[in-house]
Length: 276
Image (tube, rainbow, N blue to C red):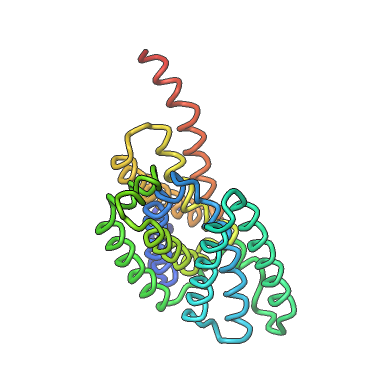
């Protein structure tokens, strides 16, 4: 493939939609994931991804791909998970695992018994650029505005909550409100992003940026912004590679994340050792 042939891809509307939606999903995922990972709540993203798979399956078969239904079901699931975890502390992984496996099992049954043969499970497990619509652009831009507003207005509260929930309670910061808000925004991100990256891969957008930047030990605030830069860089590289070599976009982006993570784990300690 030549450079000219590569740039010819961008004459197709679905490629441009995929680029815009995927880039915003990557950035939003890094922003929300920074708080989730450091608070050890990253499994919530994985559980919600499986619930999103179920909601999309129901929506396609019975409701003509209703985005409103998907968002409502994801919101209900996020609040349910938050409620169960808050009253069963110490068993969060088991609770999320139970909900996740049940959701993906039911979703698979619904899809496989669907008479519409144009719908394939792989499209929802691993994502597809062909699934993206103009409505998804509006949804992801709206979500980006909400996330930026939420994080911008309550950054200090979220930072305090991330490191010391008891201190947040003492200072009357009402940590439950921020946790609910974080869970709801995460569920909406998963619903919107599942079409591009798939239910099995969307949680990687939440986890990897922070997982990578943690190795640099930059501090909370600097890590937050560097994580966004890493997410942006990784998405653009992964997206370009997927077009150039005709590979699944979501899988390619996750693999580039994996490479960056392995490099950060292996090279940074070596560099620090030579400096010492």
